[in-house]
Length: 222
Image (spheres, rainbow, N blue to C red):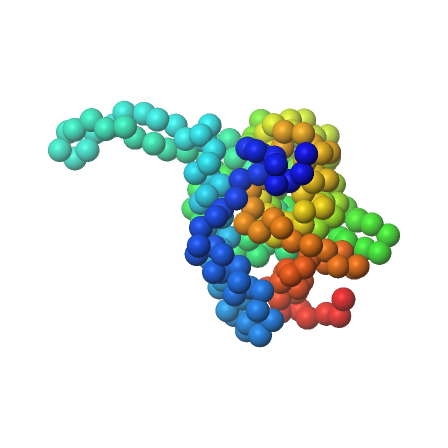
C-alpha cells in the first residue's frame, strides 16, 4: 500500500496558508529572519491542527457562564501528552511554540545525527512515565525514515505502544513515508508536504535545503 492510499494514517494540513508558507520556505533567496518567521508560523499552524485532531485529548465537562447559564466546557488532558523533538532541526518547530502554553505537556529531546555510515543516536533522559502518554515525535524532514525509526524503536523499548505514537513532520519523501508505514503498521503521521522526491545524496527535492542550517544560520556544504 503506497503512502497515497493509506487512509486515516496520514493526516495532511491542507490549508492554503500552509501551502503559501511552504512555498516561501523553498525560496533560496529568503533571508534567515524571514525563514525563521515562516517556519515558526507554519509549525504553530501544524501543532494546532495536530492537537485538534486527537479527540482523546479533549475532555468535556459542564460549567457556568457569568450569567449562570450552563454550557459544555472543553479542556485538554494535558498530563497525557509528551512531545519528543529530534535535535537539531526539530527545535525549529518548537521555538515560540504554542505548546509551551500548556504547562503540563512533557518535553523530551533526542539527538540523532545523520552520517555517511548511517545514523548515530545519542541518548538523553527519557521519563519513566512516557509509556502512559500520547507521544508526538517532531522532526522537520522525513527523507529515508532512518531518524524516525531510531526514535520510535527507543520509545517502544520504554513501553510506548505504537498506537500511542504520532509523527509530526513538515516535509516527507514518498520513499521514507512508505518505509515508515510498512515498518510500523497503524502509526499516524501528521504532515504538510508528503510528496517530496530524494536526490542521489538523499536530500529532499524540491525540499528547502537543510532546514536546520537555514533556520539556525549555519550554512554548510552538502
